[in-house]
Amino acid sequence: MKQQQLVLLLLLLISLALHAPTMVSVTCDPTELSSCLGPILYGTAPSSTCCQKLKEQQPCFCQYMKNPSYKGIITSANANKTATACGVSRPSC
Image (tube, rainbow, N blue to C red; front, top):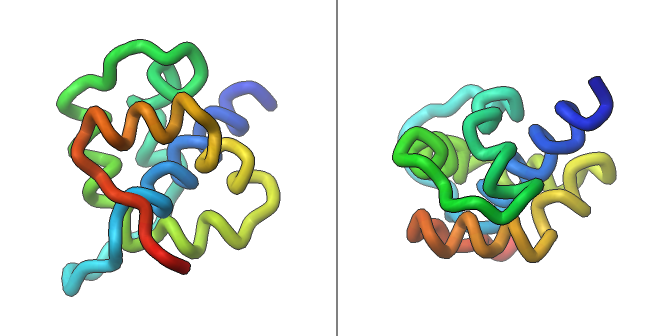
């Protein structure tokens, strides 16, 4: 359970770090990034679903970064690698 939560937090942090806020209203929900757990935890290639979710959750990255539980995950090397592979940039918070 804790590993799944950690992975979700990492994914959310990555999304926040990689995407700048957009005009579209988004519900910030770290579980939306569950498809990115493998890439963030193990460095595997992200799926198109993972990339789509990272882009959708990008406006939430700064919010996720404020949570100490997610920050370490979002700023991890694999999270950065995943974001880069998806073409998602990290916002300035």
